[in-house]
Structure formats: structure tokens, C-alpha cells
Length: 112
Length: 112
View: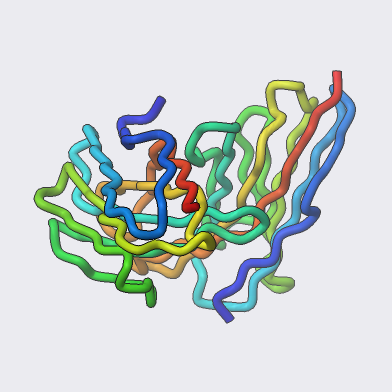
């Protein structure tokens, strides 16, 4: 297992719920990323943080709200999601931007 | 321009055979080409990577072949084993660029 952990591993939520995904890295990395992985589609980069500052928002709907309180923790706050948002959400980190990314195990999200 | 096209979508190989997965890109500014391996329930893990200054890189049973003029690169798994059964993703990025662009993945099954 990598030094990137994600909780919860599985989440089922209704469209009106509010939930948060958590990512923690124990690798001393400075950059963190959120990806969405849907079946038969490429991994989609959602957000990038570098030294706690957001450097990339890849046209993600506002119902997804990231938060990076420090270089080790990354959250993805979810609000009024749609069924098509059901996917595996992966967190990754890298020592610096552009360097090798290390992925967590993901959170499998189902929106009903 | 930013796409990475990966084929085949799925692959079945006999134990001991050679598995070959191909990727093609358009953006000539790409200069880092990693391959990731993902097992069910896990996040992608870096397997092997190449930069365009070499045409081949080998690590154990895994080899990347790179053809800069054709803008193609491929992963070869020699002496494929059942434990290699996983989904493989190629990716590409520009120097200093934080974004990895992923292929759609190849699901490999190595039959005993």
C-alpha cells in the first residue's frame, strides 16, 4: 500500500446529501491532486494543489469543493451531486508539481 | 491535442506469453511517458516511465518502447504471469507541467 490513504473507501449518498472525502499523504509531498475515474474513460484530473494553494481547477462543477488545509491533507466536499457523479475518486500526491504521482486507493462513490 | 489514445481496451494472454499495449499521442511537447498498473480496489501505481531521449527502457519483465517520429509508445510484458492481470494506463505530460494526460486503460488478463 502507498503512503496515500483515503477515507471512506466506499460512500453511498443521496442527491441532497453533503459529504466529504478525505485524503492524507505521509510522504512529505508538496503537491496533491484529485482525479475522477469512470468506467471506460480516462482518469480525469479535477484539482491540483501545490503547497496548499490551488493551481488547477479543471472545469469542475461547483458541487465539488476542494479544501487543502496543509500539504498532508486534502478534502473533497460534495453537495447536491448527480447520479452521473458516481465514480471512483482518486487522490494522488507528488514531491513537486510535475513529478511522479503516487495514488491512494480511492473512494468508490455511488450517488442515488 | 491533449489526448492519449490507448489500445487494446482488453487483452487476454496465455501465461508465459508477451503482452503488448500501445499508446499514441499528438502533442509533441509531451516529454514524460509513464505507465501505471491498477489492481481492483487499488489506486494506480507507477510501473515504469520513459523520456523521449531514449527509445527503450527495460525494468525486469517490463519494457517501454518509444517511437518519437511516430508519436507512439508501448508497454511489453515478457513472460506474462497471472499476477500481472490488472488494468494498465499509459500517460503523458509536458516538462514542468502538472497535468498527466491518461489513456483509457487496458484490462489485461493472463490465463494460467
